[in-house]
Length: 336
Image 1: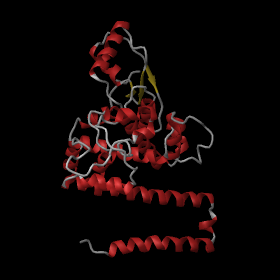
Image 2: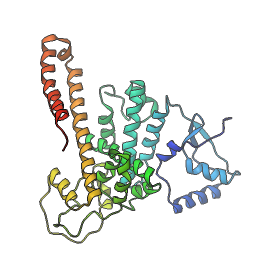
Image 3: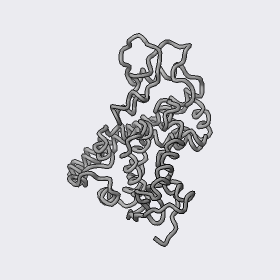
Image 4: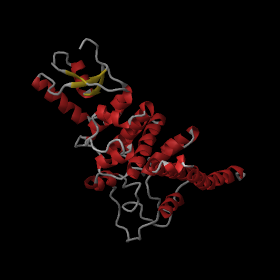
């Protein structure tokens, strides 16, 4: 191709980086063969697969390589494809899988909003595995099915990915530590960063490096029973053990409810960590609203008469007035 190849920073940021040893091994293999066996995949001159191979080629111009041009309707579809392609790697950490699923979901939602055609996106990005029933299947449901996880896990992965990116903006380099598993804060703590106000984020990023258990509080098991720390077990069951840290044996405890888990976290935290718990509730509230809207839209799609028939429409609006009154009550309450 005549157009010079280039690296798009946003595209490259979606790809889990190789370790120094992995990069050296790749370089040695390429130099030994004298050719890059796998083609560089590009879109509009931007590399979408083969960033490390391209850097090695730049360092060794004598190495031969080939280029495969792939077509995408827009950059969102390209990002979705990059994430799908990377999810096929075997050596991903649970955190990396979680991040890629979250990034893919976000990219496909943006593409769907931009073009209003989810089925076209998946056909052209090459992520769809089955052609049947794609039109009626929503983005979140499809990604969940293709990765054998729940819809809620997909949504949590999106919040986690946003939190990772927000943390890396505050402290460049921490993204690699999070995704490699070098530091293992709870998923809730990571997601809270993107939810927090900008001036609160630095303090929350600092908390990511703190131990998850606080020694001066009542002993509460926060390891195997806490879904935030074991979130990746929903993404890959076989890798769940790799995400838990070695801890001293603890006495058996009853599984905690969600509220008990949140209270247990907040009980051992200082002021900045308490902010993280409040930010967590933003996530829970957003998820609740998102779930309500999604279920309502599904009802309207399956039963269009709910809105088109006057008698039914009045009943629908009457039901919604209860939610409106709830919101108005909150708006009228003065904060303390």
